[in-house]
Image 1 (cartoon, helix red, strand yellow):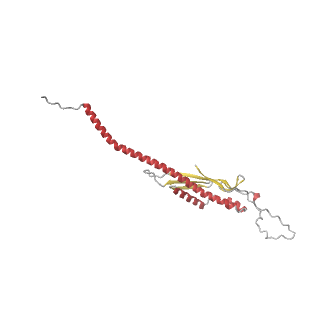
Image 2: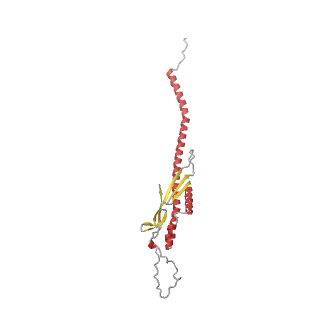
Image 3: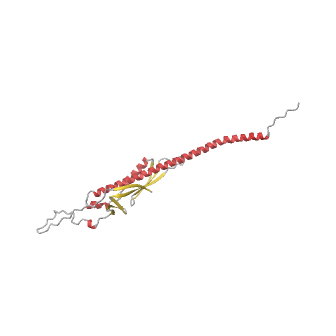
Length: 235
């Protein structure tokens, strides 16, 4: 009997077998790479989502803080309106032009209000300023939480403005009265009382033959509307 010949696998079959084995190895190696890429993608999406949400919340906190500060200022102006209008005396009425648009005490209250409203909306007051001439309040806040991985806090700014539309007016940093549609910051000379107004009529008795002078009519305040204003957010 002849020797049996050993069965040999065709060359093409061996090549296919080696290719399948390499392909299987590549698939196994690709799994951790895919998992790593997926983890990075999830982390990036989480960071972007967190940053977007924090930025939105910081914007809300900034708006609230600016409006709260402007409200404190507006209440001060409304109080000045009543303080100088109600007595009906010439000196009290026109004393409004000597009042400061903003005092340090009121400015401190404004900053306290801005701080409180920023904290109530998940942020901290980072900066605070105001402009007397334009009746504007500016604030900057930082979100209380940091963006994951980036370790930064979202910031936002806001500006609120008081717009006077009744009773009081502002001209070049000075308060005045809105009279007949115009901002008046000083009285007319004809409106000012005489020098003898306010003297005690009983201090001097008229002598014999002296004619009693007619008394000047009491001073009447110009017609002024009640205090009116609007507080708005501006760019």
